[in-house]
Length: 420
Ligand code: EPZ
Image 1: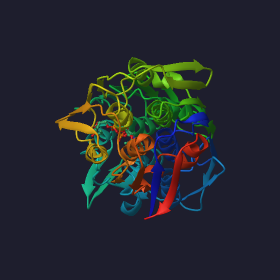
Image 2: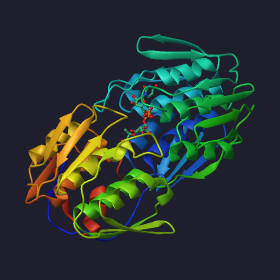
Image 3: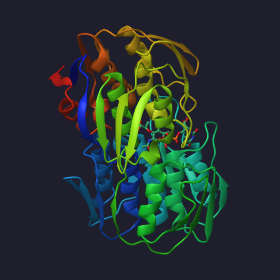
Image 4: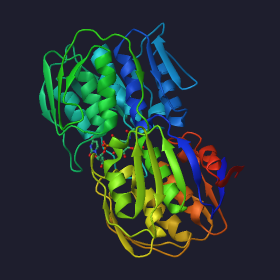
C-alpha cells in the first residue's frame, strides 16, 4: 500500500489542468446500458472508480475499454441483469445501474450498496422513484430485485430528509427514458453532473426537459441509440486546487474549468479574501492579503458542495479567527477533524457543526485518510504544515483525483509517493 509524503511550506505557482468529472462520468457509463449501439465517452479521468464501473459494465455483458481518456462501450455476446455484490460493495455509485438495467431489460438485480464512512446513505429515494414507475420491487439476500413488463410514466416527489438526491435522480431519470408516457420528477437534484447525464441521454434520443432545475420531465421513448459525449470538468477537483493555491499563499492558473459550476465555492473563497479572476475556461487564484475566517453550510447544488467541506476546513484551520462549518448533507462527515487536530489544528465538533479556530501553522505528522475528500483535506494541510506529513491509505484519494501528486509537483510542491 502507498502513502503520500509532503514537505510543507512551498508556495504553489503555475498552471494546472482539471480532469473530467468523476461524478459525471459514473452515471453516464451506466447509461450506456440503455442501448445496444456503441458509445464513445471522452474526457474520462483514469480513476479507481472509473475502472470499477468499467468492470461492472463488463460483468453486465458489455465490452468497455478506457484508453487515453476515452471509454468505448460496445455490446458483448451476452447481457446480464445482475450487478454483483463484490463489485457494487466497493463503490456506491454502481447502484445507478439499477435504472438503466430495469429500463432496458425490464428486470434488474443489484446489490444494495454497503455502509459508508461519511454517513448512513440509504437508497430509499431510489426505490421510491423506481416503484413509482410501476416496477415490482423486493429485497432479498442483500439484493434489490426489480422487474416490470412495462414501466409507466409517473409524477413523483423525490426530496428526502437532506433534500434532493443526485444518484436517485439519475437512476429514475434513466429508467423513465423507457417508461410509457411522461414522468415528472419533483425535488430533482440540480447538480451539473445530473445535467451532463441528461445531455448524454438526449444525444441517445431521450426526451428530457428541466434538467438542472428541481423539476425534470421525461417523455418515454421506445429506442435509444449510441452516442459520443465529452464529460464536464471536475468542479470538486477545481475547488480543491483553488484551496491549494490559497492555503500555500500561491498563484495558480487552473485550466479546463466551468466556473459557472463553482458559484458557491468562488463566493465563499472571495469572502475569505481570495483574488479570483475568471476567463473563458480558466480561474486565476491567489490570496489578496491575510485570509479571513468564514462560516460555511453545505447544501444541495447550487449551495456549497459537501464534497468541498473538508478542503475548506483545512484552509480555515490556518486562517486566524473562528470559522463555523455546518454539514447539512452528511451530518457525520467529519472523519478528517481528528487527523487535522493531530497536525496541530484547533477544531471542535458540535453535532453537524465544526468550530475551527485558526492557528498560525500546522506541524507535519503521520495521518490517515478515511475517505476521498478527507484525504484531499490532509494533502492540503500537509502542503502548508511545517516539516513532513505522511498521508496513508491514499487509495481513497486515487478514487477521485487523477494524478493529483504529479499535478501538485508541477506547481512546485514537494510531494511524493512511498510504500507504507
Ligand atoms: C453524490 O452521491 C456524489 N457521488 C457524492 O460525492 C456527493 O457527496 C453527493 O452526491 C452529494 O452531493 C456521486 O455522484 C458518485 P445523494 P449520492 O443521494 O448521489 C440522502 C464524492 O466525494 N439520501 O445526493 O449518493 C443521503 O444519505 C462523493 O465524490 C437518502 O436519504 O448522494 C445524503 O444525506 C461522496 N435517501 C443526501 O440524501 C436516498 O435514497 C444526499 O445524498 C438517497 C440519498
